[in-house]
Length: 219
Image 1 (tube, rainbow, N blue to C red):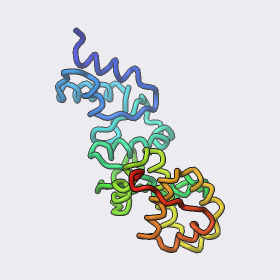
Image 2 (tube, one colour; image 1 turned 90 degrees about the vertical axis):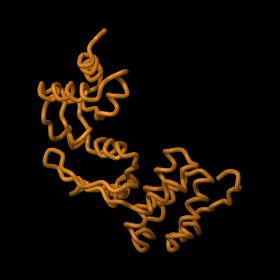
Image 3 (cartoon, helix red, strand yellow; image 1 turned 90 degrees about the horizontal axis):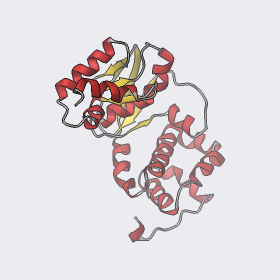
Image 4 (cartoon, helix red, strand yellow; image 1 turned 135 degrees about the horizontal axis):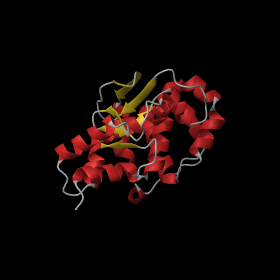
């Protein structure tokens, strides 16, 4: 039988270059693996410049300190960091707007919002800030009946609306409605409920887009 170290090496070697992975992921993949043995195997791979240690429990399949590759991998690094503590993370402010196609500006800082508190950290000199959002934590619970893609669509929309404010949002009505049009009737009903509860000014969107009532059984 192959040693744990060899099995870890083989597992990592099959990952594509630029793939972000976690310590827990490797432990789960290698049956009957002692955590200390996996840890030492990963340290050896890092010393041999086969992987990069991004932060505690998070690694990047790359043999070089390629800053552009690291920047491109930051969203995956942030998601992996959140998953390690069973949290969800989303882009904040201008990054959320960019996902809506509202702006193409590159972020000056890498900022995110999460459902749990995560301390800011550095990745090869790049500062990453993750702020706890009570709104996002609540939405994660309320929207849990939706599939992940639709849930993320609504959360990113609400993050964007909070950042835009009413005046800028009104100027972007057509763009926002195009985004809303991809949401299912149940999802739009839950979005309407959120508008009534916490974003009353955003109800102007309802004047242009019907928000159907949802059966209690469907939510």
